[in-house]
Image: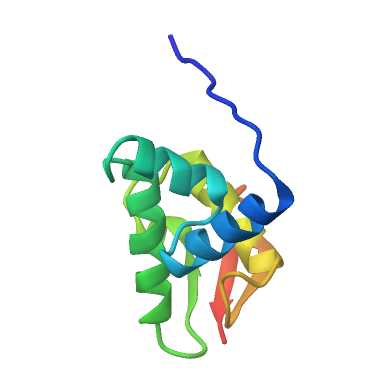
Amino acid sequence: MSFRVQFTISDSEKAMLDCQARAEGYPNIAALCKARAFNGKNSYGDLYIDMVNKINNLAKGETFFLRDLIDTPPALLGRWLYDNVKNGTIKNVKNLGNNGSDAQQYLKL
């Protein structure tokens, strides 16, 4: 069984949490809040940070799939990668699209 936890924040609180999430390497406010709620024990948040670090260490011009960076990645991590490449949060990466295997391929710029 799983549960959903929600709370309301003001615009200024959202802006503050957005900045903190980016500064701490989290993909979004939800991942930051979950990590804080569990005193840093958030495996998805840790996987995201590990993934971004591995991307940053790739050579320019290298192509990759998420599975090249993280063994058996959860679908949510793929969603975060796709969204954050698209919105520019993950810099110097281009989405090359789906290669026919339902996996998105990326290029390190």
